[in-house]
Image (cartoon, rainbow over all chains, first blue to last red; front, side, top):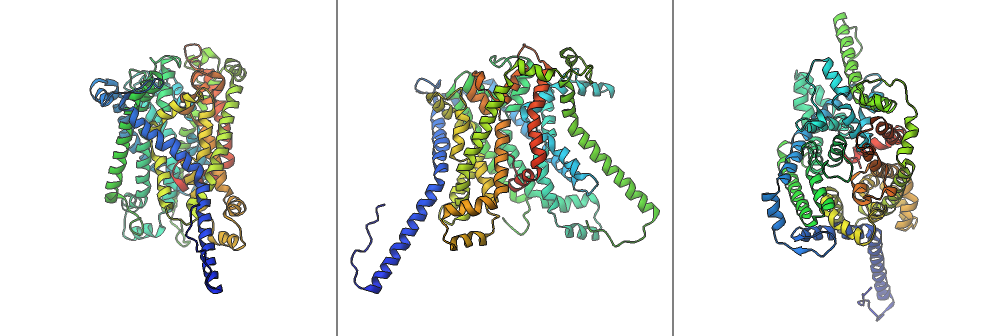
Length: 332
Length: 288
């Protein structure tokens, strides 16, 4: 440690002890700083190695032609131009991902609020019901997707039920028009996580507010609109942000559903996005480009476009949030 | 809810309350059934014969318990389980060893720059994995780690944003007096972590461990990416996704039997650790 500014002359006893004290204090401070650095060091190394370097590297790759092995060849903005003008599957995958977010995020939030409201009524056996409501969220995504592909197969239980009710029986995972709706239902089934935070939010609404609304003569719908909704708006905001960010990374369910439904094996790329690219989500197309075809420059460009879109969406959501998010006790 | 003072209620009011109770119970039961039905179908199908699973019957006739032995012959499930356990166990050790000190520094020590570092941790949590995964894959290829469990396990020893965040939230709830008392007794920060923070926040640490175990157990993307075609190192989630394609078409009964075995440990853990779990989700709003 290069601190040479320590006084070496000792004029008198009291002054010496003063200098001594300052020196100890500084040593303590330095040791403290060293300790903080030491305790932080795993994260600091990880941050540099797994975030800072890879981000810069992928930004560089995105302007190159790169197969992952031989050195990257500078390609200027070729990857970006190709993406927007010559790759129809880029747009297709973007559309699929946007579809899931635009429909999935609001549906999931509405369903989460509804299920949470049902669970707020103090009824006999409510704890058992809460466990059952939550349980599907625990099921590993791969297993849950397999279960849904089975349930929604053309002659499966769902279509038998629809047949009994004399309703049309879509081919679900075998029909491009119905494959995404089937995945939406899978998402609603695993609502537990979102439901739990809404349940906590609902139980935190002060009862006096409802009593005041009662005195004003508000009906149930008005109470929901003017008391519940503003009070849980921070939770809604949080869920929208998390939902959008994770929606752009929606991968596993689409990947498993299309490879299972098409019956193809892992090695063949025909399966990707089946049926007819309706389940080709943006991260799946990126995965195919980067790790199956080893177009790593192109995949890096796709990753950066994804990143910029996610950032833009998050910023817009945060900027517009003060119009509809109500924080108890002023701005937080 | 605080009810009104007890008062004799008229018959109509009583009848209305009774009907309301019936309606609410019916809704609860209907929803619970809806949430459970898919799991019931998975279990039922896992007990059918291969032929029956392809037909449109819903009840196994006869019950083919043998499926649960057959799956171990079709695929090396024990090997997959071992790999999954290695991934889950070692990554959890890594996440805790690296995460506890960082979370402590970010919650209970005052220093300039703490907010900045905390914001950086949070921003890595929000960063889409796609932005970093390609260069990481290139690095792991150069290290000859592709096809092994190393890329799945080792990065966890360098701090995991979600775990640090969750641990921090738990550490913030430790009463300041406890830490002050330990400092007055002359304990160093390391001793305080060991003797005060870890024992007091053990529920929180258990929650973080649980989330990491589940994350690794459920993870599909990273094994798919890094384990490739090296089947002997596959995890259960990878093996499961390939059950179906083993004979070129979907073998539903065996797939569902394997799914049941894959789901079961998670559900057992959930029943025993429900409280820890729910607390973790409400504190952070997200699951691992």
